[in-house]
Image (cartoon, rainbow, N blue to C red):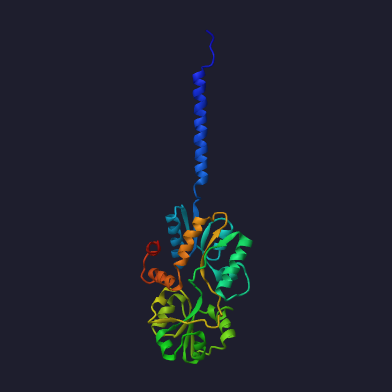
Length: 300
């Protein structure tokens, strides 16, 4: 009997090959369907770290895998997202307008947002998601006792009483175009009773210990929750641009699920809430992860 091919063996080999091909095809399809790992960045200060962690928790809760790439220097984080080293991070409208787009000053919040949203889409293929009312901008803080004594609520009020007040500054504010020179151009001269210098980390100690009355501040600094001690003045003539907090995301990873998860976070953040989150880390000495989780759990 001549030796020949075994029909049954050939059939089994063909079936096995088909099965392997099917498994590989299914695995490939599953890999394509699985969401990418989202690389979330943050700048290297408390507020950015907390908000980025809230973004991470929101996306994980929505079923996405995330990689945390936190603590990037503010001077290079824009390069990190435009060079595809991160996919998203919390950014400020005023920073986008002035630092990264190098455009002229705009002070109306919605106009700033719409401008950066349009320009980022055109220049960088990056989307600014929903606008948050939380604003971490430049401001001036005064001792509450002094504000009540002189009836000071706005920077215009402050300018009128400058001759009775002691101003403390870290120095840079006096020179920057958007610092004291910008205030003088808009409000008129500030003829302080005294003007002294301090280390920025000691600012609130200087005020609390009655060594000065007024100092430059950022509008969501944690110490500002102590309203019995410190009052943030209203920039009533709009010297400074708004710095509203918004998630910025590369278009090549953005989908409806990411947008929905991050927009929900933005809807829950306002200036008072952001100030409180900063205070929990900087004053109460809680961990960033702990503060972020408690806040996210409260909005789920």
